[in-house]
Image 1 (cartoon, protein in one colour):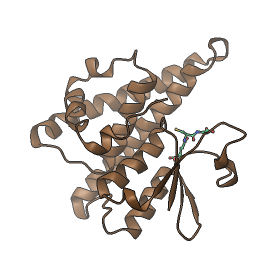
Image 2 (image 1 turned 120 degrees about the vertical axis):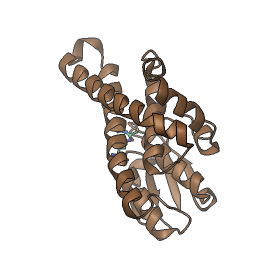
Image 3 (image 1 turned 90 degrees about the vertical axis):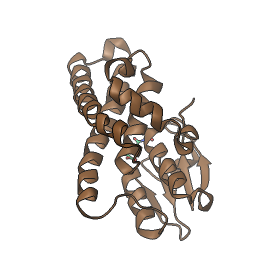
Image 4 (image 1 turned 45 degrees about the horizontal axis):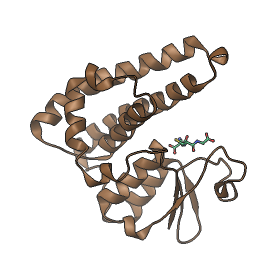
Length: 202
Ligand SMILES: N[C@@H](CCC(=O)N[C@@H](CS)C(=O)NCC(=O)O)C(=O)O
């Protein structure tokens, strides 16, 4: 299998962390690619031209991080995206929140990177409010995560990717200052090899 990725993409990071946490990273060849680039090798593989993309051994091209994770979960015993039963349902609900935060962060960053004269202040404020609501919710939840020790399932991976993107793209937004419990969890979780190995860089 081949995983097309960039070092900055939080969506690709999600798949990379899942591979590392499952111990099957050696079964996948990582292909560093470029996006928003007319010469990118990715375009002939996947017309949307977004990362991550997974090309399976049989040549099927999968895009969208969540579908790639679902494929890995269904095909590799080592991968356990979510536990079964009520715990799994709670984590599925949490995964929805974490995906909402991740998308919010990406859209907010994109809106802020638009040249100033083309910016839409209402759209920017809306995304900022979305991110703020999600961060508040996670800060409250993080109290029991910090107290009860580290559990690390799919929503926690997604949350790491969202917080990592926020720190990487908008370091001036000091979320750790405003959400100290979440920051405490972040410090604990940042010790994991899968998290350290996938820190975004340009
Ligand atoms: N919904 C997609 C989003 C993927 C995505 O937007 N990736 C970004 C990098 S973070 C990308 O490839 N952007 C290139 C572009 O917009 O052309 C997923 O979950 O995989």
